[in-house]
Length: 170
Image (cartoon, rainbow, N blue to C red; front, side, top):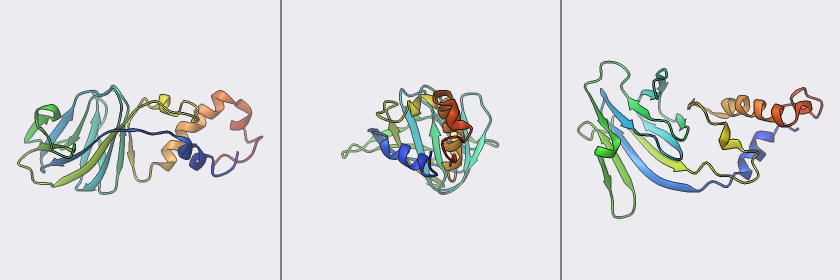
């Protein structure tokens, strides 16, 4: 396997965007999402805060962080501590005429601003890649986290590949 294995696998994904939205969270507020039937991706354009999936630990985010939440998991974005208010996303959303959905926590101040989408956990030619999402990924960049996740999958499918016999693991 060559050093570009991860890049080749990501290129083979047939990803279909299920929805697209914008989230704005005022400083000190929290926006909670019920579980979705698809993987949720948040890209942080502005602001800092934390992500919590289910009852798991809080993970910090900053601008340009990519957050990937597995399907069928609830999650919250915003203040981990000193939270002045928490709202459910489904109760604070607006569907705009162009199909864009906006979610707001607080007074609408975009102290933290995200573009978000959902992708179906179906795929073609990618070795069941999305089946591996059991925990959230939150970071800049995610490449190293993908490598760790893939290493286990490749080893399960071809034990010889994980030992380096077929080339260097990226």
